[in-house]
Length: 543
Ligand code: GLN
Image (cartoon, rainbow, N blue to C red):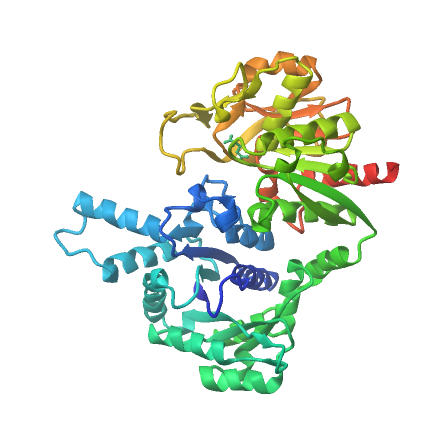
């Protein structure tokens, strides 16, 4: 029997609803239950793919090629359940589907309305493509009271009624602001937010109270009384030292126990937190420290590289070191050498990105890493920039560049308009739509026999990693790049697309066209990140 847990947020945004959902999913899993996590986003974009990462954070890509909200990254990192296209939907997607159906005549002459047509489409989404999981956790983006969230709240209200309270729980996540002047936590915003939810017919069954300070008992009782929930279901959710401590901390606060009690599940298996405790222990009491410089374009907004910073942390967990992240705006090297800013780095990483701004700085940073023999990891755009650097500096191809920035003499990185997925040929028009048209999702790559990456991937011949890019390293330059020491050691199975490059005259220099950070987990660090950090630890011993 599948039970639904709907997670809404109130008072302010950025409360950590996504983490709370992920943590609850992980806690239920440690008790042996199967879970699925989904996110409903009320914004009008069909997906977040066309949004700037500094607007809405990273775009998380699933194996099946969907561009989704970054919360799906948390879900996958905490539960290990691979996110799918069917786990994230937006108002834009719902409406475009409803309108397409209307145009086809599927509504048989009816007036198409928010209730029931849009709400039916939302409910159909929530209940589709499930595998009989014990719990489906469904997070509603935004904050209660937002105009665009109303159809989603109405849909979950209806669904809650249809399956009945025994199979549906509404968790509301709020903030208790702390007033320094009077030294007290305030419950009124929570009361208002729960009332706001009531006006759309939803009674919160459990309130998760985010707070920077311990919540006094009388405040908890007050919330219980005014918000019409049992005292034990007002759960204090205090800030955690690391996000991987959230499952343990919320468990201590009674979150999963109360969820199971709500569903009247008698004698549930106990939560097993050893694994999470080990991860937290490694994070808070590591044996050493390395510093990694991330030279990118969106460094002013940390959420734009969410999976990346997590994957680096996982690499630290694998090596029992703390990874200090030094976010460097590549633009600062556009006109100056990076010596000073990167001098302390034990590893340099150039991540994904779009557009020309800041690329000369990335190229300078890569040259620095190559010449000074600092471990270098180039991801997607970072690999493309490493290829341009080698072409210009080592192959004497002065006009080497990417056609992403316009025509150039040597397009060592070029627009991809045709590629193969399994047996299917995918094609794109050069001037087509921007949304959802990149090379997206998991693709296999073959690894060269004598390569560093093959050893890193535990001698695998073929790997599968997730992609999100429109441009690709131009295979026609392979011989010239290899003669200059930049070896192509990973290729698409048809041999046309360079997926990995590496140098053998350097302690650790790897560029990958895909995004390995998307698949890294705290309990299963990605081998490339684990090995990059290992190399950074070695480098730190040299200096
Ligand atoms: N802008 C590059 C491309 O489209 C790289 C994209 C990325 O780093 N994800 O190919």
